Amino acid sequence: MKNLKVELPPLKQTQKVRFERAMELIKSLSSTTNNSVIVADSISVNHKEAFLKGHGTSLIDGDLLTTVCGVVINVDKLVYVRTLRARYKPEVGDIVVGRVIMVAQSHWKVELNSTQDGVLKLSSINMPDSVQKRMTSVDELNMRNILVEDDVLCAQVGETQRDGSLQLLLARSHKYGKLDTGQLLKVDPYLVKRSNLHFHFIETLGIDLILGRNGFIWVGEHAQVQDPMVVDDEIISLKTRQNILRIGNAIRVLSNLGFTVTLEVIMETFNLSIMENIDIHDMLGSEFHVLVTENQAERRRRCA
Image (cartoon, rainbow, N blue to C red; front, side):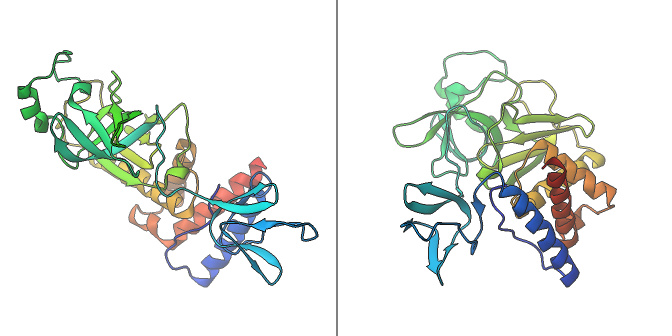
């Protein structure tokens, strides 16, 4: 874990004690493997030797304290805190989830939780008949039959364009393209680590989970193999909707607590809510946040 700053609902006194005890355990276990810090943490330095205090640090009463959350970096005599990115920094080949914000001439603009928008060209789309052909003016006029504003899609990051925008690519796979029947979640991008697996099919729940490297996460009904731009209008079952909401709330809680979001941790949180008989809505309450923190502390203690 690289960020211990949390955004919690109000805690009762007993909950606060439990939460702080669990977080202290997590922090003590984390400190053995990285230099993660939160605001007002003390940075260990040799005061007998000269050092330079850099960004994110302040010397107070002889102690070098942090003023931001991040990771302590030492470069020669310079000591500073590298803050965690709030915005996504794209890399070629990243799997991302985005939201269409504009239908333009021969392309769509896509929000990616970055300083740069994504650009999905019409020529990158596999038409419904799966035939690759030269795009015509008629195809441009029919672009809104494929994607419109607020549609959600999954793509791969290509090269950066001359205007600073990012080219998006759709691999020839049913995993890429328009996403339908589900919900889009947003977490800090650093909580989603680069992995060989960003697509997950949770077979027992009938749910697809896509962990976008840009911090956009899709939780939806499992999509059957079909053309990626063809929408199935089948009505989603109540049980599947409940599973989607429960998975979504598990991700929200993990994000609030600053825990890295992986399939394993998400499912552990999902199962904890069921085991503790926590209602879907109550998962966002203070007690479940404390339970998740205690569960993570125990999990890390066992692995230490």
